[in-house]
Length: 291
Length: 317
Image (cartoon, rainbow over all chains, first blue to last red; front, side, top):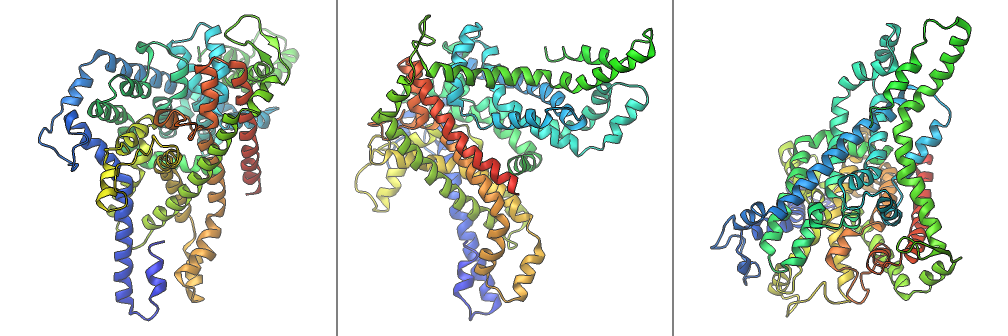
């Protein structure tokens, strides 16, 4: 929008001044946008290096005299906090591996076979994505308690898959559809089964697609809040998002530690995103727009 | 567990050599038809367990009383629905959710489009472009729990937002943004806008890059101003993306729970109560699982209406 305004308002200008004006407006817009997006993050970072007494100092300073890593040390030397991280890693990695395995098999079926009800089954899988978690959490509570999985890793891993599986199946099916069928049919001509074709041919060349899906799956599970809150009870089973909330409840004034914990808890996702940015955004937009 | 279905598939695929040819061929076609279902079986089991069974359960809970917490539940007819639908808190939650999702969606769209168009400008070099893109995507990379604590820190009565507004002369004393019923809903919505616009931006940027350059060239030949190009080329070309993003956003935002729960818990005085927090409180704070189920079923029905529009829109494309 910023690029449009000055141009429209200045019909009589020379192309050169017009271009300079447009560029100025553009960079002004970009700078404002960067403040809007980045300033809160910068403030979180700055607060994590302060002593707690300096958090609400007036006037506020970005870097204070007592600049230190104390808040980080406090989190990283506290067994209870480290447990939240361990739990989040265990759950998110298990969800990623299981989702990829199950979705791989399903995507193979959708991409390479024609069978009755395939459209119906596919429609059900797509519609799972629209079911509100708040509707599911009540029966999940009943189910998970009934199956003896309340306050356990399997209870969380299983329920997180309701979010990750549909997306993974849709994305991997689309990925398989881009690979020529002749590849796996050559295996069948040689007498191999469809199972051999999947693992010998399709899986090795689908690694890029599986990485994109895996990264997204990990992020969903790492960030999940409602099920982690409702289906676990004791502190030793809590994941990072709940841990951040617990920190808020227990020491409501330890803002520096809350910010340090928030940053530490965001690092895995930030790294995954920055490393796989291109592939991930491409996959995500095609998923959102076409799926 | 997930590799278990592998065995039957391999066995089905191979015809035992000792069998007479005719029945073996027959069996092999039947077996071949079953192969895709073998691959799908883990998915079918999981979807049944994680979606179909729970939805049946929550619907049956909603017509009963004393579910989950007590052993003998009794049939209650529509009593739970009447209770929910006449609860003033529920009606407040509907209104708040409506405001929250509509304002968020419009703001997400405007910000997403604005940022995407700036990033798509030919005046930007590639390095500048990717640098700003990373900065703009930042809010989206933090989990909702982190978003909630960041904004609680910034919006604290003695926090930095009040300091800046005070310095600019816009307010003369610290405002308790989250603690006052007249502002809480708006700042929660603002935090949601901040955390959600990058997804629109990314999708719209992809959409902008997909618009053929000839369309703009043709418009230039006709002497169209940049504004007319925007209205007559850009917007119509982006229309399908915009509509699907808007409906998806309404669905997602209506499901937002963590942000509100951690920023205000639905308060003060129900001013930020949403359908999700209302339902959660009934179930997990008051242990009224049957009434909560009725509320959850209503949420499901409302979502299905939105999803119906989404699917219809996708079909039209």
